[in-house]
Image (cartoon, rainbow, N blue to C red; front, side, top):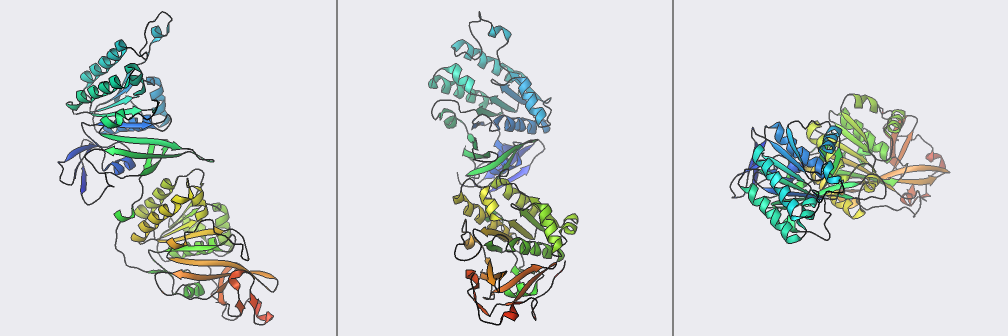
Length: 527
């Protein structure tokens, strides 16, 4: 199906934890929430009542956890839930629930596992032995429990045991089809868990189920596993296609739906964000326009992060809110360096207007990163976002080829929300022609501010210039940047130099004029 469209899907919460929705001209269907907000968003509201669903994934991907959340969500709304366990014991399920802070008293657990007699040598059969006798016994026991409890939600964990009991694919398919027909008239939503231990690509269940959710772990060379899920099939409903990141935390599975910028259209009145440095604002044609993205590009240590923080402080001082995600620098160093340059970052953080987040790329998935930004935008009315740096964001990605797509959607979303974005990219090298950019994302940014080192009179100096601004005019000059003596200064146009951006300029003025400060050298700023 196509990606979920907000124009032809509606949903309203009802008192029994269900969601009623209609897609196109279809009859309204009752949807049961899964207990995972992000997954419900992907599914367009939840799982349709009286349907058969499959959640598949390798061991350790979180199938049991998400199934328990599904049953607990029903219990919160007075719906009976039955967990049929063919693989894990009841004690193991209770231990899983305890690790998440859950109590399973409202859920009936039907355990089909071998007792002590089955382990004795004289025992002819066990529950897990693939014989026709035990398959019939297992099915009869499960259906009897369903008849007794009359649950609204049922989970089977896992189907690999039924597959073994059935011995061949034909009998296995007939058994699943029989279960599907049995539950069809009982107003019951069934979730089947499969650990994908079958040889080859077993599509028997996928062809029978109304919906299929695949959960998987992607190995990374360093850091935590990247977990993602995909809705492979959902009959009669629209859903968000593609992969969606998720994590397993205390409290359950957290799913982060893939961001689709076109779903977040919003009109806003454009304004300009000032930096607090008069010469820099002049260089940018008055300031950075709201709803645009600005890329600060240059070698490490040339002042990119400092200018980004200067914009964050200015946004707060003008009555807005700002957030900074630091991938490379510790927050303690950031605050200390800002204080040394007259930027009281700590005061603004304590006021709640400035949010600082130290990001460990090895512990964070891109989907989770985007989700945190969305939370800030929608709950704190964010006006400025700083990402320092995109190099760290790149390291959180499974492959460089996905970075541009992720950033395109994120920047599109922020633009439509009227949020100004400032990003930094550290280039390899320091001076000369050996400077290289690890990933070219300059075409995604509306404005590009280039930082460079250059040598003059035996001293290493810094320069900056605006080389691109889509939203309006800007100076095409090169100015000196100085950060010392507790202040940040942007100086006059470097008219007496040629080749500043190469790192080895030719000076055409008098050497005495190189000494700082000079007349009209720029605004001295203190926060």
